[in-house]
Amino acid sequence: MATETHSLDDLKKVMAAEAPKAVGTAGTDGSAEVVVDAVEAAPLPEPKIDDLGRAYATGKRKNSIARVWIKPGSGKVTINGRDQEVYFARPVLRLIIRQPFEAAERVDSYDVIATVKGGGLSGQAGAVRHGISKALTYYEPHLRTPLKAGGFMTRDSRVVERKKYGRAKARRSFQFSKR
Image 1 (spheres, rainbow, N blue to C red):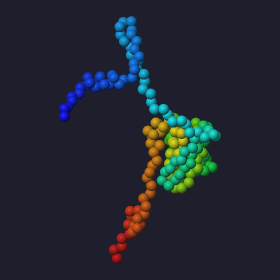
Image 2: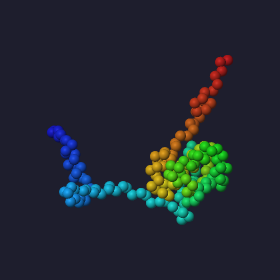
Image 3: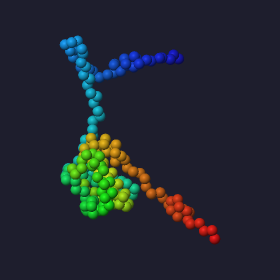
Image 4: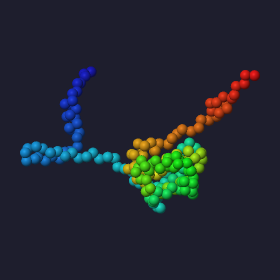
């Protein structure tokens, strides 16, 4: 079994052979100008828009499930038939919902209609945020990169740990009695 030794010159030769075709023009002073064709990126998927001009996605967080529709508009957010200020009274929850729009630089450019069920308000806000992120990528596929970098496309899989037998809760023991 023979061992082969490779050098950087061998690598340059291999790379030159595999390089895309270059278009060259010779200058008047004898210098050569080379323009290399750009490598084409993978094509983006087609937008998923229904007949009413909306994009639909499902978002999940803890035990909450949100069905989200987005369409171009003035930035109005409606959750279960109520305005976001009424449904999510805490400003922190409204801030969570706005995060995908800020990451995609699309603040106040889409109307959101969402129906949420299950869980508490914090989980429901996270579910709506996840649904908005997915719906944005369905409406404008090129927004997937900034939303993915912000961590909005990943479903947060953390859920409450189940209660175990012989315990008061998941891990808490019953109170110890000395006498």
